[in-house]
Length: 423
Image (tube, rainbow, N blue to C red):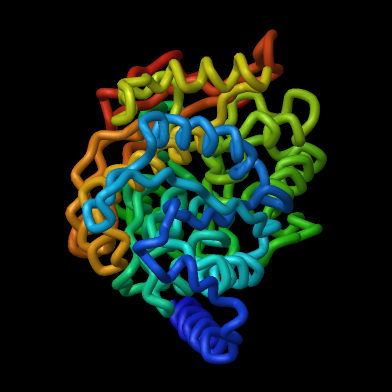
């Protein structure tokens, strides 16, 4: 927590210093004269390349689809201007780099004079952008980063967030363990990074293991890009660990999981967050190493939610993506689309481009979206649903995710029975 607060202070100081040093040539006078405005501009930092590019891959496809829905009748009516304005975005690649994400956010605010920031995809993108927005007093809507990790950079005044919380994440994984409670030895080995995700999630798992009588084997958190997991694997083998759990970036999990097999260690269950979210992550493991892996599913074609734009269902959005791209659906599709639903709803209610009016409208949000209901609480976040999934081989795409546990959100259907143990 201390490191996160220090980072937030650093980001705020950097943002304010950047604003002071910014020359007037960076300010577009036309953007500051509301009466002459011909569009509303949304800033969109996005990890289009780099280690977390799989989170951002659905842009600009989703962005263009959502803007089409928003602008089909001329855009958003702004009462103070007495006219409709189309919504435009500026999509900028963060290269999956937190420092660059902050720099991108600062430029969008100071140079491009955006009216509102919309940012998504892990704390590496969301946290630095939120810090800059709060420092420079620009309304920010964020999604797709674990809420506790996002809150570690707060408290926020200008930023509001939608995603699941770490306690829901832990409960979802534990529910999958409990489904097979009579078949394993209740010994859990954990792997965590020394990042906001790991820092926020590790205590939740420790607490639940203790409460339910599980033995926890924790070799300690580690930084990104580990090359040798032998000491961790040895500890798991020595303690007869049946369940592996945690949260890693994909490259590190690939290294860890391959070394597990190379060293003759195969647990009965593996519930791993972040690293196994997408088909490309499973393909990267090689061979059949992804078969039966368990993870969190935060959105899918099976989620029973509809768009506030036109009633399009989760299944219909996935089908459009597949038809247009030929690629399998991915969970960020729904959250990207829902982000624009929130933006449109906020602007319609604000009927103004005044930033305080927009901020007030964000705080009062109460809308049903493609990812479920969004209503922000006093801590500026709205929790979204989470269920448990398992990877299986698939003739069409190579791999597919099935929902195997819905204890926390029974409105989302289970699509297959859990396979146990790992093959």
